[in-house]
Length: 340
Image (cartoon, rainbow, N blue to C red):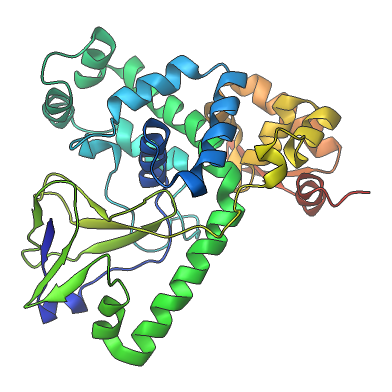
């Protein structure tokens, strides 16, 4: 049972940005690879992602991430840092996976050691101990591994997950307009029900979340299933992640059967690495960010971006000492299979 103390005053401080969080999506999707929950909706996704992981040669890396974020009664809170509120410095509404992974990599050593000791109560392997000590190389590996996994398991599904999140946000906004904050809270029934100043709902363990005057951030996620999720440590800024059901058939049927999808056709035309560069440019990224997400050297990432720019699929803009790459409309059309 999950219990959240929720007064009328707490309702006025509620933060509901209506957008996903890259690290929560990353960790919760790792959990889905470790279980069979919501099989009808997610088994096609599991098959696709596992195939991508093998093709990318990241089987060992993803297995290590799954050990760090086990599908269990406890996983480290530092992997899901508090979502950034408000617009980003660059004006965007969402924090990218690179920035979120960098915040994970910047976790204080004392917290790393404490939370990983709880994750591995019988003793951690040597590579985990290096992370627990905050070793710089180990933290760089962790940030890069999180980015590469996100690029395979979360980013390719952004168009359909965003559509589901937009529909959910419309429903929440309508509930707020019609019934105020009480109406908004009621829209979460039966996941959560408000009774006598408390929000209660099913949870795999007994968990309480006292707000103590702190604002509660409510985050939607397509990769959250069955029940909301909160941080284990109630001393941290309170966050509640709640499930949003994807639309039926959100994973293409052709991909389920192993038929070549648009991504495979693009890879055939421009090569698999450049196809991945094009895919991850669903948001603008610097050359360094491209290299990190795809596990390339900056020089290699720059060469691929140059070829794509010369083909009219990517535009590049210098900003100070960095170059920002953006997918063009022609690149969007190629990925969507709209080029004849």
